[in-house]
Image 1 (spheres, rainbow, N blue to C red):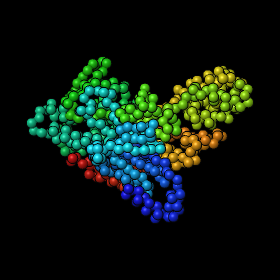
Image 2 (cartoon, rainbow, N blue to C red):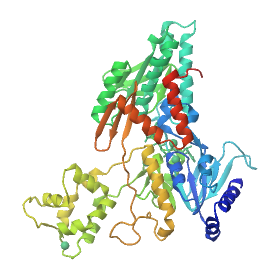
Image 3 (tube, protein in one colour):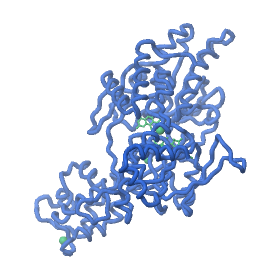
Length: 551
Ligand code: FAD
Ligand code: MG
Ligand code: MG
Ligand code: MG
Ligand code: MG
């Protein structure tokens, strides 16, 4: 209640226009946002909150800048520097938005209600449960770490997903060093305590291994001179290489650098069991081997949260692994529900499913065949609806549809070729192979949050049809442009002030200068001037004084 009256005051103060506009608004639709991570927060920051009655529900009352979590594990950056209270973000929007610190445990799409539970307070029934109604629901709850049901992982390994995880890892590293220093341990015991194992050679595992290596060689080796030679870092990856989502050149550079740094990269090994003292891994050649370890971090990819799995069963997606949306980020067969970020994936419509309809639309003169011109006239719309067509032409180094048509005809010479439906099918038969699944990254989640907010801001315009606000050129009034991801590139920090970057157009850059690019990009991307100041001063402090090793 305090929040909403604050909002009214803010409106009255901020000029009569807004106040009048507000009083004239009809009953505003209820928008409920689940989650305050990259997706949810970006959505909220971009939403015109005057248009809706907005409630935010998340068990975390802050936003965390996840790309800097690995830096928190080594104390390069302080935890508080990468978090921003959600109430501070909402306050900037004029106090119009309500926030409940609770988690959703059930979605009821029939009645448009969500069931929530608070972990910090109880109601008269003695539990913390309550219901919330929505007209529109934005599901942005992220993912959980995937253990692949490997025994002992949950009990014995650290994850690196939340700020608390990073803090725990840091404490655990220090504990291992202090334990290894105790007077009553023998050499084997000391070695065991100083064996750090990272499971998973993706970007997070690699960056964590690199930052741990820096922490050990640059800071801890000076503080623990008598045991520093016993430290070992192992990186275990089931595939044949680490960083497989990056260009081969980056993978090679990373593997070589880690080799020189003395990080033991074990590719082709699958961890099958973790106990309190040993980690067991499997390789077709060597069979099972068990090694003693001091601390292990598990970072092998993500899985779906249990209540989302339940929701998927309810709406007929029980056979899928990840919640599917259409290209407008709407959950199919589920009125008013949208899903963004790591908890969802876009089910790109295939050209082949619609091929007959496309043919019919394109064949304006109803001749039963398509000329190059006829295809070209609808091409922009095809590109928007089926981005894989453009990707396909690019991958085949074809300049345009004329090339494709001619190649389908097997006749490179003739200018005026026409395709019948069978030939048209054949020409496009391979384009769907270019359908790309978007990666689970902050970049994707935040672009989706921004897109969806834009849609919601123009929803009135699109009330009759909710397919987003932007018109596709040459199409009818109520057709709108689907979500389109713009890849801005990706970094892989490798330690020792060296970073690799893969930028659009397969532009690769590796080394110290890229590290400076990394610093500047991550300083720029901070969510507020406050966190930007804090992060930059943490970096400066680290340059001058090194990392803090107290816990
Ligand atoms: P999240 O940001 O995870 O947010 C989910 C939100 O939902 C949280 O607020 C959570 O508390 C809340 N929630 C959970 N359960 C419930 C519930 N039941 N009810 C309500 N709310 C709930 N991506 C990049 O692009 N670049 C990087 O450099 C990068 N580095 C990373 C480093 C690390 C260590 C990690 C873990 C991730 C990194 N990522 C990076 C990935 C990026 O963080 C995720 O892709 C992104 O956070 C996904 O956003 P999201 O909104 O879907 O989920
Ligand atoms: Mg989110
Ligand atoms: Mg986040
Ligand atoms: Mg996704
Ligand atoms: Mg025709």
